[in-house]
Length: 168
Image (cartoon, rainbow, N blue to C red; front, side, top):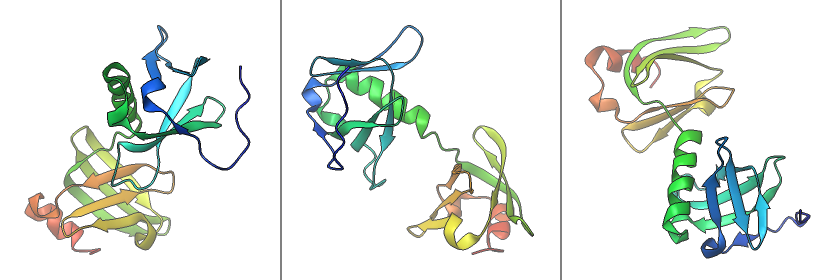
């Protein structure tokens, strides 16, 4: 296998030459310029406001192979595989109701109802782990990187909004 570049300059991959497919075992295989990587991982790069741009393709060991500038430039079959992989990696529960928000010595305990069922997060502090996006959207991240979204504050029921007013 070809040695990965040691430069800090990211390699912009030619999307037309990128081939992504699932192996029989469910791994994500990547072919590029005659090289085949039996298992790769995909990560979104900043800005998160453009989720289909600047996708990092990394080896199973965590070395970056290159960046895909825009998934729209991939051939349709590869694009579908990439979109499915990113959807799974960045699955984020959406809050449908807030049961309780309580301050503890370990941080703020949030108990939610999501589309997947009950969830809870402990946010060490609100300043760094509660991000207001626009007027009506919140993104919460615990210290382990788990994220939950409140897509619309005003669409929450009255009891949930009352809990939320404790911290906003």
